[in-house]
Length: 486
Image (cartoon, rainbow, N blue to C red; front, side, top):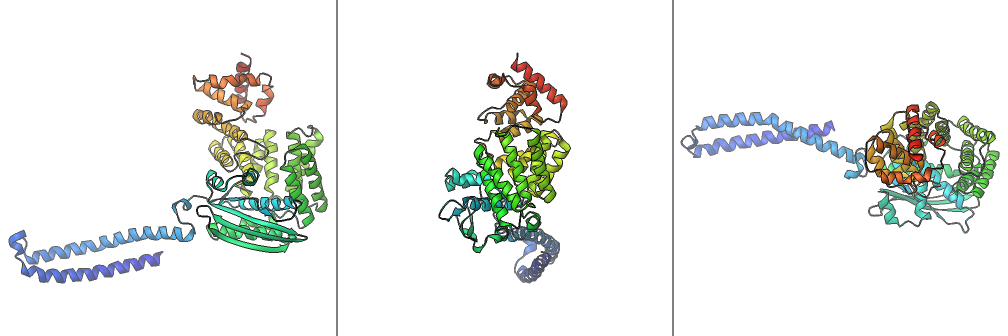
C-alpha cells in the first residue's frame, strides 16, 4: 500500500512542477500584451507575485488531497482483491451463506442411501465448523429433496449465495464422488471435482471438498477447525457405516426406527470401542426414546444416557455433539454453571449448528446474558426454522419468546406469539404475563387460550421453564393460578 501511495505522490509532484513551470512561462509572456493595471488595478509584476504565492500554497494542498483520495481507493481495492466476491454484499462482516443439498444416489438400489446421506450430513457438519461462513442446517438442506422444494424458491427463501451439489456411487469397496460449487445468481459453477477412491478415504475426500470450497469463497484461512485428527470418529469403516446407519434411523423419529438406531449404534461401538460419536449418538437416541415416550423414564435409562455422553467426551473432548447434549442435560437439571460450560464449548467447536446455537442461546438468556442469547436463538431460527422431528417452527419461536420475555420486550413477544401454530403453555403464560405487566388492554386474544391449559400441572410445567430466578418463577406460578382458576 505504501509503495503505491509514494508512487502516486511522486507522480502528482512531478505533474504539479511541470504544470507550474508551464503556467508561469505562459503568464510572463501573455501579461505583456495587456494593460492589466488599467483594467484590474494590478501591475504585471504584482500579478506574477500573486501567482507565485498561489502556486506555492497550492502545492502542499494538492499533495494532501492526492494522499487522502488515493489512500481510500487503495484501501477499497485491497479489500476487494482479498475477497474473490467484491460486490457490496460480500464485504465487511457479511458471511456468505451456503447450502449442501443432498447428493444424487447413483446406486442401483437404496441400500446405500444411508451412506450417501450420511456422507453429505458429515459435509454439512464440516462446513458448520468454519466460523467465516454460514451454512443451512442438515434438516433444512434435506428439506430441499424431501419436500420437493423448487430450486429458485429455495435460494430465495434462505437468501443463499452458493449451492453445493453432487452425486455418489458406491461400488463394493470404492466410492465415486462428484461435487460442484455454484453461485446462486447466475448458476455458474465456481469449482468442481471428481473422486474415485476406496471407502477408507472418505474423510480425506470430505476434508478436501471443504477446503477447496471455502478457499474458493473467502480465500486462504487458518484451517484449525479442520484438524480431522480431533474429530475423525473412527479408522474402522465398518464402525463408521453403522454410525451413519444409526444416525439415519434416528432422523426418522418413530419408535421402530429408534429401536433399530440403537442396534446400529451398538454395532458401531462393538466394531470400534473408541468411536466417540457412536456413544454420543447413542445417548441422543436414548434421549429421543425418552422424550417421545418410546421408553419410560427410569434411573437405569438416565444412567445409560449419562454414561454414553461422558464416554464420548472422555474419548474426544472435541466432540461438539457430546458437549451439546451435556449442556441440555445440565440445563434440565438447573445446573446453570455446567450448562454454560458445555454450551460454550459446543459453540466454540461448532458455531453454525442450529442445535448448538439454540441450546447455547437458551442457557445464555437464563444466566443474564440476554442480548448474546437472543443473537444465538435468532440465528438458530434463521438457519433451521423447523428443527428435526418437528413439523412447525413453534419450538424455535417459543425459545425466542422466552428470551424476549426475559428482556421485557413486549412488542417482539406479541409479534412472535401471533406466528405460533399450536400455542404452548410456556409461550402463553409469558406473553400473558408481560402484557399484564405492561398494562396492555388487548388481552382477550391471549386469554382465550387459557381453557387449553385448565388440566395442566402448572407447577411442574413452570419448573420445566428452567428459570434461573426463583422470584420470577414464583410470580409466574401465581399468575398461572390466577388465570387458570379465576
